[in-house]
Image 1 (cartoon, rainbow, N blue to C red):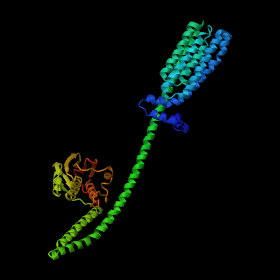
Image 2 (tube, rainbow, N blue to C red):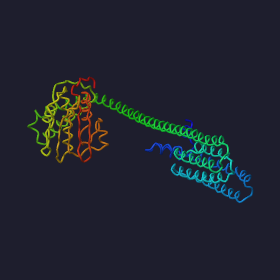
Image 3 (cartoon, rainbow, N blue to C red):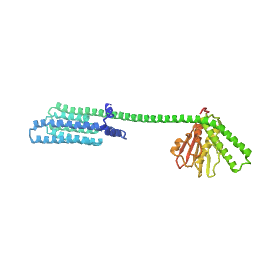
Image 4 (spheres, one colour):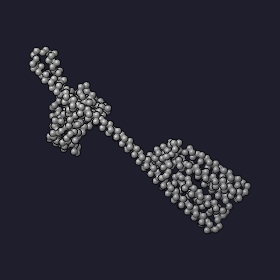
Length: 468
């Protein structure tokens, strides 16, 4: 466990290596990730082990001298040992250039094979009954299994091959005379292989479990960081919405007061206009009558704006009545004038029964229908259909108009936002409040140039929500 702690707090100079290991930890193969994860540590341990082998290679020159003196055999063995030392040093030096565990395994496997062959040649030259060299083989077995970390299968092959070679040398070349000595040596080699293999197997298991724990901790850390990021974004979004809601609430309250204050003078203007038309209509020329018509139209439009302001600022109280999607859409279509270049296909159904405020919901549908018509000035198709899904029914308005951009979709239901030359931008905001008062919602989908889809989702059994 400490290993993981050290790994996650590596100095900056090792940060690229650490990132490489973390990337491997996210790979498809657990073996790839595990071996790559430990590669830097394994390389360091392997370098130590290879340099450790140099000690006995040099040290046993003393035995060569005792056995052969300054003879040709002695100098031949010295040359062999020197070659082995050079190979060990080159292998240790090459370790720093290794980038993946496949190369590491091959280098270690070949190096140890060369060492085993060289050691076998040296042991073959030993005098008869000199079986002490078996101790070196036993030490080598533990070094291969426990000190040189690489693929467990390769460890077994190398260790068992080295032990078998040593056993054959003892049986057919050194040939100890005492059977007890022979049994002790061979049994010791066997037991050393079993113990070292068991230890190596446990070590590999521990390393794998440590790696798995590291991966879990890394995944948990990434999830925590993602959740933290999402939470920060959520808090920021909620804060922004709260500020927007407070601003709109203030706007609504002010709008309500302004609406009430403006209604009285507008009533006076409307009454004065009506009086002038009745009293002096015959005396006015066409221009005068047109001016009175303009005044009436603007008073009517101003009254509509005031009604929108009051509707947005006030509470929505529902007067529920039984109806169906078909009846609601049909009555809404009767309230508007459809251009000749727009085809309307009413595919709504007479089921299910709904409990809705007919007046308010017709206002919602009429608003959506007018927006769809405005989006198709050159003509097009408008498809209206309904579909019951569980406890809700969806009424979809599908047009073939210009579509709505992503930026416009974000602001679509904001009050005071409009893309039209005439209007205050309260229409869809009020529609949304009405639908939400019924316990439903409005969903809009659109692609620029491909039209828009307005989906009004309503509960089949609506409840009366006050103070919405």
